[in-house]
Length: 434
Image 1 (cartoon, rainbow, N blue to C red):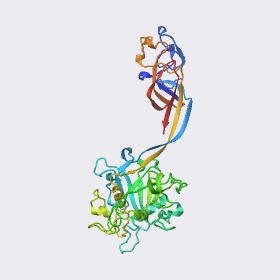
Image 2: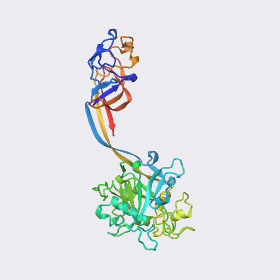
Image 3: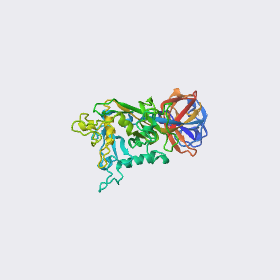
Image 4: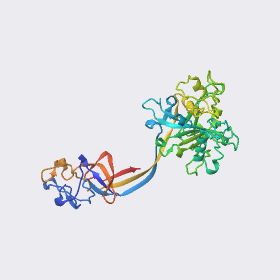
């Protein structure tokens, strides 16, 4: 690998050539600046890669892996306000499986899908599982969702048993060995989170109604990856799994040993929530709201107005397990996100990158002239300005990286031009990130 350097004024030095001139000579031999009356100073030229610069060897390299994080939401924002949350446009057939969540009203020109949410049930309840003879012989959409994520996220020997989330904590709603029959799932966009959702930095906030219809407090959830008491799994091919617990931005309020709300898979961009735990904290009104039916028997509906009776009646996690229709249980998760109002949810994405640094020393005799036409004058190519005699001053403005065959591989521009003359020596560091 070699480097070539752009010179001040947009030109480049090309040492060598017959007669010691400043043209694009190819010899790479001794160089003499033009004009005997201009003060003669010679330098040894370097072999040429192209006619656009001085070629110098790379003196050292350093390679390091780095992690780059950025906000997950649109425009690299790290926060999304509850009042901004809406459901995106989706076909009726797809809404049997999941709902998209946007950052503003779906008819707005700036609306973009941020993530998706789904509801899954181990036995298919909450979707149509009845055949024409009214016998439960079909596999419903909620069973397909549950099975898909179990197959994707659980070890082979655990798939048939289902998710074991709630029973992890001493205060969990389910006893040891009892699986979570129903789950809520948040699935992030790979395009947004890159390599993984950033752990120990996210916060999901939920708010709804209790069984009597009164507003609940805000339930704030995060992962326990930064906690000394975390009990995640780290050996799986899908990456680590952390517990979802009470807390915010990686700071745990109540550990998984007491209560576990879900599993977080950062490499998969997926959060699986225990329906039993969410329902215990935010059940939703069991007596209905005005003309709306109780949460366990209504078909959930999203509305941007919190005054809407069906929206309020659908603001909780107690599921409608009706097996001959589509009660839209996944919308309850969206409603509880919307209910946090002016508070925010927080997500960031991470990308693993390789950073290689190239170091090259520009010695005093190197890179002191330019092929810029304004640098010289006359047919003999004398330096135009007498102040340049014996010690011209130029500026290095760019660096090109070449392979051993002289092919240009990358170009870097200096953040600030570097002054160069016969009295200075400079080491330049070029960072290549990929």
